[in-house]
Image 1: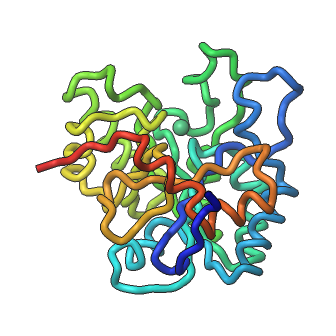
Image 2: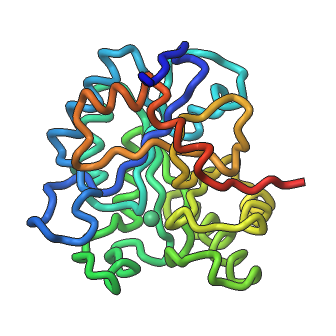
Length: 257
Ligand SMILES: [Zn+2]
């Protein structure tokens, strides 16, 4: 069955990016998570030509809450790589877009060492000064915990510290509010949704694949992954059709009372 095309204003894709850089050689771990700066710039250009406004999570909130309606999409970049500042920011700015970069507060200026056990090459992360440049460039910093743990493997007390202290540490670093959270590895339980809400975050994103709809839980938002193999044609399909939404029913999200 062909994927269904519906009014795009009622479906809000929140794009997920990781590294904006040339991919390492064939066989490298997580090679698919690299999008080249050229491809990223072309993708931002396509969004613009299709009439989408690319928005940070803060700017997207009125649309997710159903208070406003337009052809918008969220742009999120996970982990706070230095290449977000050097390679993604120019394309965002030239299209008048904003994005949210989720940073790991105890790894600023270091590398993504949480992935070293599975053989991922270390990549530099933005330090506090670079995060401030990101914010000064019109972009937003979101929270991605203090150390990028699997939250489901932590006690509630440790999870609370990872989530709440990340917010205050990043706010101190960037001198700006940090109002949006992203679960590392998309690994969370119902208790973490409560912790994120109590910490004062306005939204949280997951790795569940789908476009967002108005009725979605703002603290368990699905996203649309963009990876190395995502062509412009496939990006259009992901944005404008039900291609990604079919994953929604396969994924588990927690119902909170
Ligand atoms: Zn991450």
